[in-house]
Image (cartoon, rainbow, N blue to C red; front, side, top):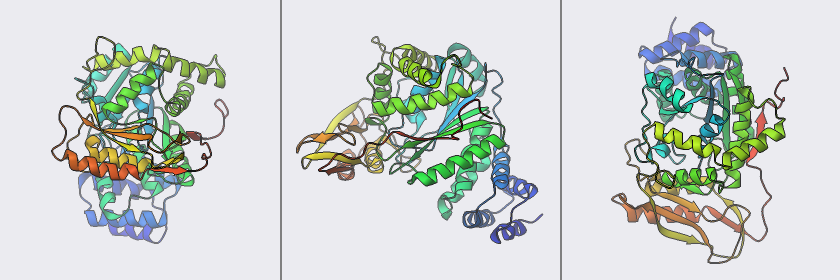
Length: 450
């Protein structure tokens, strides 16, 4: 088999065989296929697409390119959740303890942030002492103690994806549904879960800007998941504006704690409850409750202290420090450095998530390059959200830096962030149309229907 023949097949729009795809993935992983030929096939896929069978085969071969997690030690079905990325996305720290109140055990493998969407590992590492680099041999012990593990992804998991993604990033081949879907799902399959809920964000602050594209990606990943024997559902969520009110590492984890204490933002509660609902149903729990009753019960558990207690167990189990008042102790705390005020009276018609995310990243809450240093206390606090009425001079948001160790060019960053965040707020004379944070759930068929 020759790589040039595989490239030509896809160049002329023909389907690749399972054997050709397996040959390609093996050559990517062991380095026997040169980068220029890999890039050529990637571009052919972008231009001509892939069939459902091709996507599924590519994904499964990528998932087998390295280690595959064995989660047989979990009680019940192994569940997982994945987000396609967003601004202010603090769902995972809320979802895991909420699931634990139903006895659902979960191993969550997450990454660090690159760009303005942030990373779950960075957020957890803003808690003093919290250890995210957990050896897999420790997973059963931690699961036995708390029912939860949060850990960084290992390079041994779907290594073909890492190689392909780095090439896609520099060859203009990122924006392809088959390549995006196979990238995400290969890691999920290798992660070992048997039930998966995908949080597919769409809007200004998401990779998928249009709802139609978010639905297309969701459908592709569902087909791949089902083809690989994983119960898969997708929840399309709004990311035109940031989720919640805090964007940053310590800031978002503070909002997590507030949410678990019953003081969270409504949009955060809605998204978390819907994702939890899907996972609870997939895990076969809460079967004595109808759908409405289960959602009510989930919101109650999220806010009445039960999920909070599980959250504290998770933090302690991985070395995190809890203060005497029960709140986590953080590596650094936000210092309110500058405010942005409303230039006129009116209604907030939009808070562009991408600009708020870039402002937060500029302040030091994220990385533009992998080597960038994080300021854990940095970020943005939103004082208003879409639909709020404001008067001229009202505070729209606060820009924060860390108290302990602001970055060397902190002042320059602050003014650059000010320029970005100022453009994020759009004000009009009339209130905007209200938009539900949960846009769609796919597939539409109810649970229990074959």
